Length: 282
Image 1 (cartoon, rainbow, N blue to C red):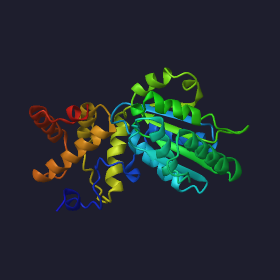
Image 2 (spheres, one colour):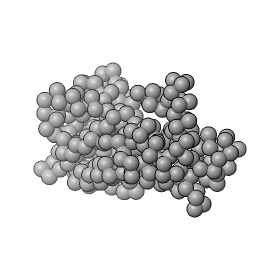
Image 3 (cartoon, rainbow, N blue to C red):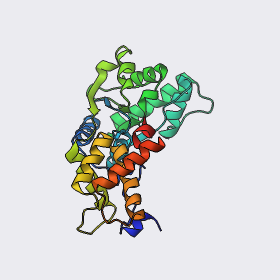
């Protein structure tokens, strides 16, 4: 039996999968999400969200997708691994995944024309919003970024026909700074920071309750949360992985709560093995 069943959970509370239902909206994430939705609804074009590894960018993108699915006037697609060899491969990918009809064997020019016609029909005629969300956007090469810049040129007198949200690691900033007429097209730019101590506590409690835990007892004592925060430096992915390990250790040691002593023993065990959360994620 899984540990979460033993503790009365309906689901695993600290899975590292980007489940939007388990996404704790800290202040930074809430700010980024609300502004992304506003920018998309106003059809302002380009939004960029930066963040270090493990700050919650991927889960934020899934939360955004969940929000867009509830809106009937959006047509969107998310790219999880934006690595394309050439312009044709990128355009072909976009056209296929947006379900745009195009002739077999179409070249770059034909693909561009099909995409431009699609954006005008959906945006200007039907009043819909076409959006592309790119996760791991730091992987975009110069060619792909230039292609996206061109797509952002498609507009009416009132709004952009193509909406773009880039979520990437901090090096993305340097990439887009080096492309003329790209950086100045950003309508919203935000950098995600690690959680503070109070947000770390709220995140742990939120995920536990989301998993179906109904008992009144706190599984993680205040002192344990403080140690976890210090060890993980407030990075959501590190917190999630550590809490998963802590609950397993708690059960194996026949304890009822995670206290500071248990947390520090886990930290020492991880450091000794060389498989600590911090080392694993960098």
